[in-house]
Length: 336
Image (cartoon, rainbow, N blue to C red; front, top):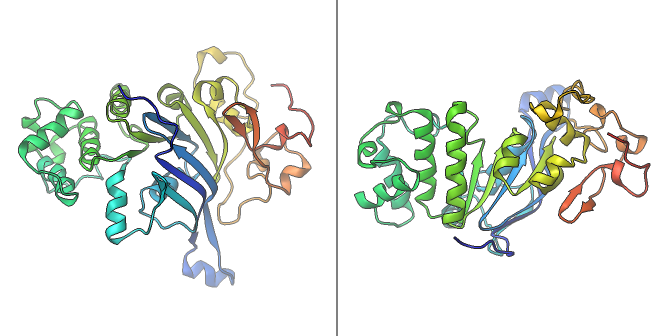
């Protein structure tokens, strides 16, 4: 087993991604508008470690995955791999980037070409990145994801396999590039509940055996607690809390993190008051609220929350939040 390294494999600093609004809408509104998909996000991924990125649909999680994978150009900010800045989203630099950073998509049915065999899907990345494309190499990839006997899968087409088997094929295809970073975007959300744990255990084993750095993207904070050593919570394009997964779940700070936890079934919380469950809907990212973006839904919002974005407050070593409730310049945190 490899040991975790203090040196980051991938480091993203101050990432911003804005998408232009449709041209017709711009003409109707009379002004240029953008979708603030990601604003000022910084994160670090280390070898042998899983970092979870948690948030509800539309919070910007998948956009971050595509930025890190080089599929979208950044509006501003930097992405570094092994200390070198990632350069461009096409050409030779892009090929080198995707060799080191691979993305596993949410939908295993949509991520594989239905007219090609499994052997084709695995042979293609090996060929692109200059590795041997022998049958033995394909068998080795399938055995890494526990699809055995491997020979029986090579000639099959995607429609002949189950969802769990297809997701294992997608993981094997990502491993064919021999990456240092694996980005898993909701890898189990479209699978039967009965097989999700098997996929998560497979990914956890690969992180350790291959010394991978992994970003696990999910809306399920309970699986993040089980699977990841560190959890980051994202809301409306911004990361608003982060820390060791167990501590973050046991001692959540930001009201939005509490909302996520209160939304997840937990028998240990039976009888406690779900004071945030009726907190309303997320804001529009075309015209996000000023100040803290959660303030329209927050029962603890203060005047400063409506006008100024909070800075980062260190709560305990490694555990931080962006919330005015924990700033020394505001009132003490209300009792839960």
